Picture 1: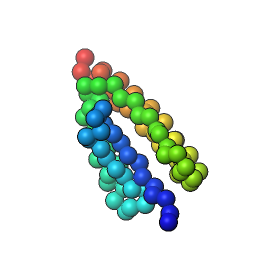
Picture 2 (picture 1 turned 135 degrees about the vertical axis):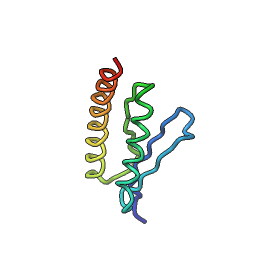
Picture 3 (picture 1 turned 30 degrees about the horizontal axis):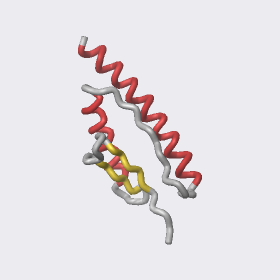
Picture 4 (picture 1 turned 90 degrees about the horizontal axis):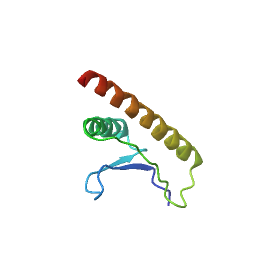
Length: 90
């Protein structure tokens, strides 16, 4: 049986707000946009830094590399957006 390729975003400490994105599903782009929208809402009140944790034993190196790069770039974008928001609100 094949591995499932998902990104899971836990947006609170209690894991009650969870976004699961199946990277093999045709709707994954829409779900990624939903997550980014939620992150932007949260960014107004909180500093955000995303950490990528890869499940032990996951073997698809290409997906690992792509997800690492995606999360790194997303963190950079969140910092830039936060700085823009601060400037706008001054």
